[in-house]
Image (cartoon, rainbow, N blue to C red; front, side, top):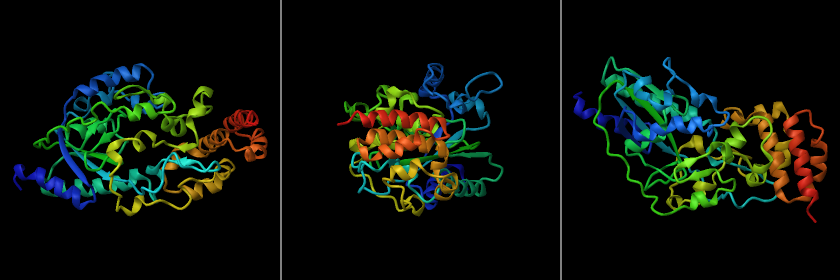
Length: 352
């Protein structure tokens, strides 16, 4: 196969693997990556120490894939839609129910589902070009995927820092394949956010420092998934009834109004994960947690985090029927749960 035909072959392979979008970018230190060290140094990553991985020279790996992977010449970026239903909204919970981000509703952890498809594309490419060096990543490698998604033409980086595509919106999982093959890159996607700031205005914890800049330590997704131990009290009320992740800045985005529904079976909602019962989550046993969330991305929060989040959500529910449950949880052996229950009980008891 001639090298000129490989970009077309790669994109066709991506579609055959189930991706909606597939583009190619050059491996270079794009301008957006220059701001990454400043973001880290400002403490915006919080407890996500894996983002601070450095090479032997002390340079942040994610700030320079060209330095981290000196053999790499191109990045293939694939995207798949996970928008599983238009019938649910972050803002339409019952007071006894929590909210799990729709990316975690599925029957399979998206890391596994996307990586399996990437391996199919990777295999096709290696078969066409023997001796090729490749690496595939889904949120696990030292590379800022959204930056390369922009330069691969997959979408632009929105003011909420998510990748936005004009036809598909932002309900997208990204996967990347680094390759030693020098391929013709696509044109970068144009920014179409315009003057809109709905995502910034809608954030209840004020996680956006400004357009295109997120303080992860204030983001509900970070707080409910990555943060261990106690959550700062000044951020708890803004968490609402979120127990795993947050979709608010995507729900309000005009580009998601006509987002298509995914046909991927792995991303169809698993029973009980859309608006789950808060008291059930707060009192979940270790055995029940392992059984219910086997193969799910929700495992990342761990049982202690999920229970803590549910207790905070109960405090934000305004439902005094939870007073008895919270009274019992105040003496829970898990310190983060017990402390959160005391806060939540005080909050509910102030209601008339």
